[in-house]
Length: 137
Image 1: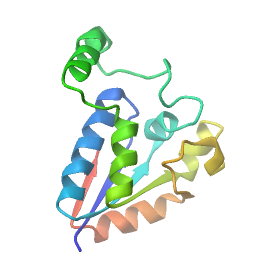
Image 2: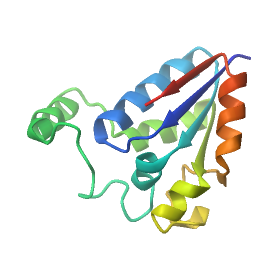
Image 3: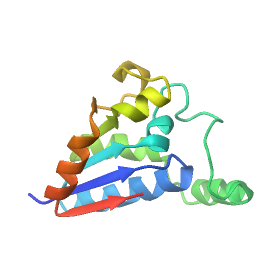
Image 4: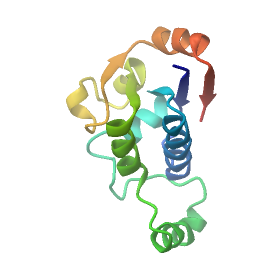
């Protein structure tokens, strides 16, 4: 089975949507996928942030237009997409321990249900070097 590793350094809505779309393609191709939540990515998956109005946009001036496009095309939010993909494929989500500490989140209970564990950055580096596809978003 081929593998993909994504380092999600940004927690912006745009990057979350890109990540969930790319993961969807990888799962459809029967790839094993590991997402490592780095700095902004870790914040976006915090239980008190995910799915709230604390979301960050790369282009805040386009927020309404993007939300309208998602709604008109029945595109689910990225967390819902990732939950569905996790049910269907080999998807694991890891939080960088240092990123979690920066945001005051040191337990998996501090994050939404998608998070599997909290790991050191060395795991991300090793997995990236071994993966068939490695991306940083």
